[in-house]
Length: 219
Image (tube, rainbow, N blue to C red; front, side, top):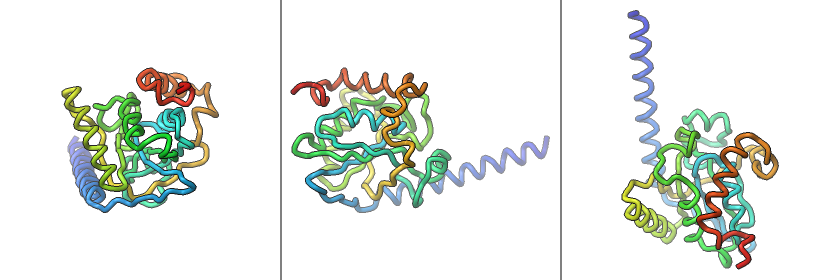
């Protein structure tokens, strides 16, 4: 029995130490200057994290002006994160997406609106049953203009709902592209149980909220 208490105490001590380290690393990241990604062939890039990237990728690819959505990892403190490593929560990374879009067709402001309209905005560290820091909500900004847009919309939504909005706001640093098998997952695996039970219903809920921004809206 004594050994059990000793092991439990050691576990608690290590957990507290890891939490303190993660908090310090997070504070260091939030204080960094944002990295601005230049336009390429007239296309801009934006970065969001909101639960499983299979879901988020499909949501953004349904939006007019979005050329491509790429699944990956961002917001952490390690280099070259993998799916297995990020899932431990120890890398600090969240499953994220890189949105390649035409700013002449869809604005960053609209992409932020899509972000908030496509999730449970009050759930901390996850979406639905996908729980853990790797599934937390983060919006990344590349300059002060984007930061102001995000904070203004986040505050307005909090006031409207009378609740705290879970999304964290980070200066963008780097996006790590996920393994090939994660890309276009919903499109390639429409009959996967998770896709049928979680991703497609989440996409459809978003479509009912913002039909005018959809590629097939006819506007």
